[in-house]
Image 1 (tube, rainbow, N blue to C red):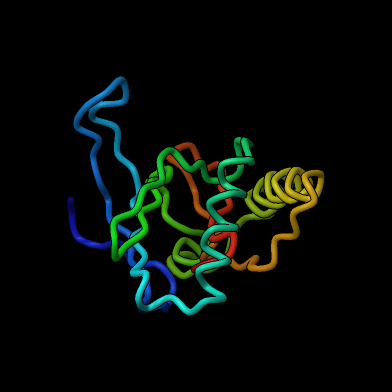
Image 2 (cartoon, one colour):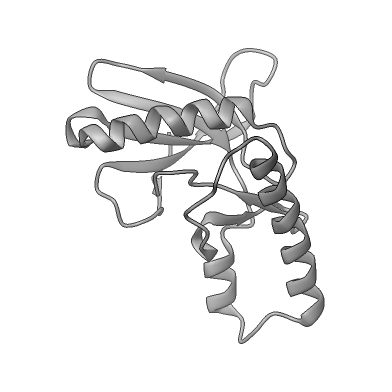
Length: 148
């Protein structure tokens, strides 16, 4: 397990970069979101379960995939896609502005992801640049269904 990656401003969880050791996906890098049960309010516990259930149900190229989920007595673990491109907020802060082509590209993929969620009866309520991740090829993936 490497150092925690930054995500959100919540102290109830952190995200680690991890590498799978065994199984058919051995060597694969994942983002591991760790949530401390004791620091989650009842409302957040419900949202965490909802996020897990949504990520299990949703299968779309522009939405982060949940690969594994497990828990211990004190913590919940969500094993998600690791996206090397970081998030749109960080990319935007490093560049003066996006090109018009970049904006059209991101918005088109974002529209497809949101349309897919809506087709499943899911309303995505936390749309912000920090929750739009980029893969190595520059494609987006939505994350943070409820908890950021």
